[in-house]
Image 1 (cartoon, rainbow, N blue to C red):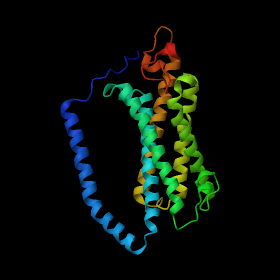
Image 2 (image 1 turned 180 degrees about the horizontal axis):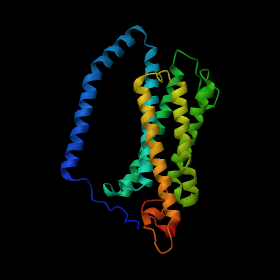
Image 3 (image 1 turned 30 degrees about the vertical axis):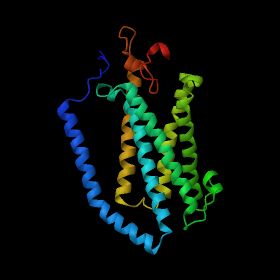
Length: 252
């Protein structure tokens, strides 16, 4: 017998305190251990090779954009599997998922536009906007450009959802997986830091989380289809992976 869907209760007070404390300590240690060296190297680069500052910014924004994109995908899967329902309100979680996607789009747009000032390669506005026109690794950069445009379409669908209808919006939203795969291929094959241990860890962690949660979601869908009429499913399993929060089977 399938149990009831999770009900929002929030995290216990002590667990919330420990969680925020761990974030504060981890963030403080990361900044304290890396900031002095990073600032010293940036100062030396600015004095000796100022043209490289743009290249550093491009690399940093590329990884930051990928991390935000991966977080948005993972958060969306956590929403679809109802794992978050017991600790967070669905409307709040859905808003955060949408905001993460928008922030990722903005950061990745900056990542591309800053290439115009990169002294290593002659990037023009056309080579940045037109897929496969890049002077550097045109194929894998082109894959990243297409992934970015797919990401832009998915983001736009959030704001015209009422006009598209639920089924069309959900179909468009599946392009998120294409965006994530394309972004990963672009990062691994085009990035100059792909051979680094920390970069490998970022890509591996994002891929592992996405594959696990996608598999879990498929298992839930299979269980829903196998359910017999005498065992009605709760709304949490009747809904599709991208149905709007609060929507039940009647809205499919």
